Every structure is written in C-alpha cells, then in structure tokens.
Length: 129
Image 1 (cartoon, helix red, strand yellow):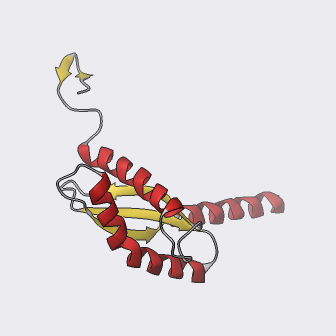
Image 2 (cartoon, one colour):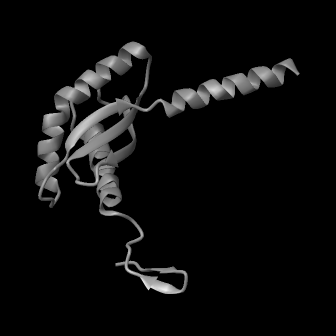
C-alpha cells in the first residue's frame, strides 16, 4: 500500500482508489477484446476506448469510446457494442478475479469533436488576422 505524507503526518490513504484501478484494468481488457475477439463488423477495428469511469460500488462502468467514421458509423458501432456487452462481460468474468463484474455502458466521447471544433475556430480566427 502506498502512503502519502500529508502536512507532516503519515496518511494511510492509497494513492489511487480501487475504482480507478478497476477502471484502468477494464479499459485494457476491453480494448484488447475489441481489437482481437469481437467479430462484429460494426465494432471491429473502428472503435477505440478513450476512458472508463467506474462507480465507487463497482456496479457500473461507463466506457467512453471514439468511432472511426461519421454519424452513421457511430450509431452502428454503439448498437454493436450494446449487443456485444453480454459477451464482453462474461469474458471479463472469466479473466478477472473480481467478485462482481460491473454492468457495461458505452457512450461516445465528445471531447475529440469539441477539440477539433475549437481548433477549427482558432485557425479561422488566425487566418482572418
């Protein structure tokens, strides 16, 4: 267990919470599954896991993903992920030594789109000056 020094006193708080460690583990395992094991053409090779948030009670995990392609590909990929979530969860249960595997929820990560929009606006402003 890692210890931190807080105002000169030794604290027994770990550097990372359990939910953060589980989120990191889930991200690695699911990303590998999406790359190697999921055979659905709506998902295979076009979905990237950006981040994972796990609730403190470890019952739910939100996967934020990006999809290569346009709006139609995004909708199809989310449907494919929803359909494959049972298989993914069962596979995680076999691989990970956890009492309970969280329910998996997949959402589009909008930060990349927002970043591109901001960069486009900044470029437009720069070009006008």
